Image (cartoon, rainbow, N blue to C red):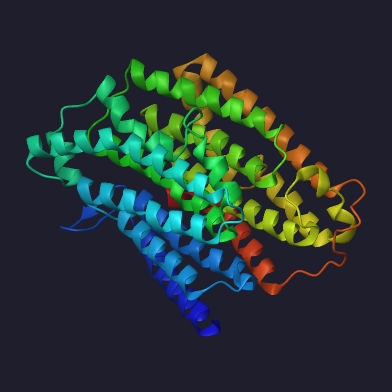
Length: 425
């Protein structure tokens, strides 16, 4: 078991370093061959995938999981790397769908409760049914263009708008997810093991944003009234999801609903047809990948002390585990976009685009920022203040794997000092 874990960790570490060095020199222009295509976004998404899979294994070190668990994460990482670096729409679609299989295996095989079967079926039904119209549109346009390559489709496509645009975006809006088609996400997070929640929130949700970016580039999706309608629903839904955070009892469900709110910013940035919008979407996806994954780690570490994920019963952590309380404070501040973190850069970059598009969009964004601060302060105070229950384990012992995981999640969020990594111009 020990050697298997070490082999997995070394594999991810080497791949992360190599791909990270490659992405530092990448630019917005596509460099593609017959099988693979790399841009700034795809390179950073591959780095995020490798890094978070590595951290998922480190965080799960004490769970004494089987070789099959490690193999599932390895397969999932391999599929995600292929999805983010595919040069054709068909291979991207295939790997986009195949990523569901190891994710379903993680939820059903190592989930916590019998309801994990229902959570897995919800996830499969939502994502597969929404992606079937996308497959039809991709095959139709590829047959007309005589190629499935992203770059050649971009040259031959005259632009897509109207209801066809909604059928293309549907698969990715469910994956992000957008409010209204999000019901599978809280169920999947609540039932998934720690590594499953980390990868699901940190990487798999980003497949939706990356897919919108790829389709917008290759099929020349135009900004029309349907796009504005999607942005309106997404922003308003993000505000409602942020409000629902204040009503959650399960801490994992709490983080899942906050993810729905943050992903609405990604949809707005990508669809409003602006360089600043795409920049904001990329920064928000990277920042959310690390911050949400870290909050799921903290939820699990707190669960190991209190034996519950019910927020009212987890109170008083500050008295018995002040180290975990410190990290809760740090990541709650990061989640509400406090400076100097990437979350702040991502949220501020989209504000001028929303303001120039519609005053209503800017107003909803302002409400989301306010509610985000409110629910993160509520989460921190509910968990860490008050009188702890008698069954909570005393002692402020944190394993080295826990500290390594949390510090590794925190350091990339300071890349606001190196924001040229995310430049598209």
